[in-house]
Image 1 (spheres, helix red, strand yellow):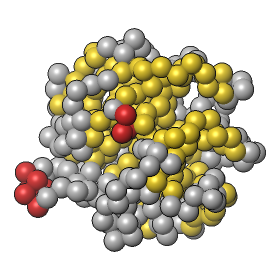
Image 2 (image 1 turned 60 degrees about the vertical axis):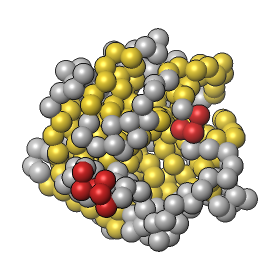
Image 3 (image 1 turned 90 degrees about the horizontal axis):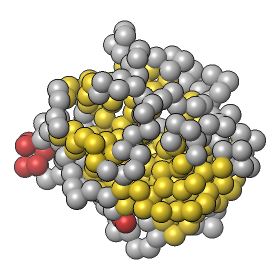
Length: 299
């Protein structure tokens, strides 16, 4: 199935990622990973677009509960971002013994914990790709008091960190496996059990995901030119065709949370492929006809 895909802003990201809707400010946040890494915010009602230069690669984020800014996962660790000063303040390094790792995708659970994955860094300072040699990453849970717990290990590329509406299932993917996994999730304890395969799809590999109010998971398919909506039992309910080959993350936003924002990339495309995909790297939108869920803040 395909619908009307629109360009929200022609931001020309190398590797757009990390989209989420700040429902307290009616603002969409997203980022561009490779250096010179940037953080973006868009207030659709006014059309005001703001961007901030980052001192290192940033990869995922969520709002802080007290409204003072964002918690941001980056190349070097976990940080607090102050939008007034535009500065990034380091809170902790989750893997000091793994200097070649970096953070990747992340999200917040219903108790305000920030979950994020790590992986071997695959992007050089000049933007060149680095081959992933091992599954060196982990999935971490960061408590509001900054206590850190490792919840899974041996991960190559951490993506898709989201929950079912009843908070009883965590969805997560090691992109190199090609599988979106599901875990039984204990909301009170913040623990995982009973890992199993949730969904596979023949086009591309799983990148970022979000869950709607009906419990269906929307997944950006890196290399697949589409976003797929999976039912709670893992079957494919909808395929949204895209004019770009590298969609990266998805987030529900807008006044009624029915607009699906889609970040995209042009990272690794040849000059000929970039010419053939003029929307690659832009922020896109698709009207879904279903409601999303409010993203919990950290804390």
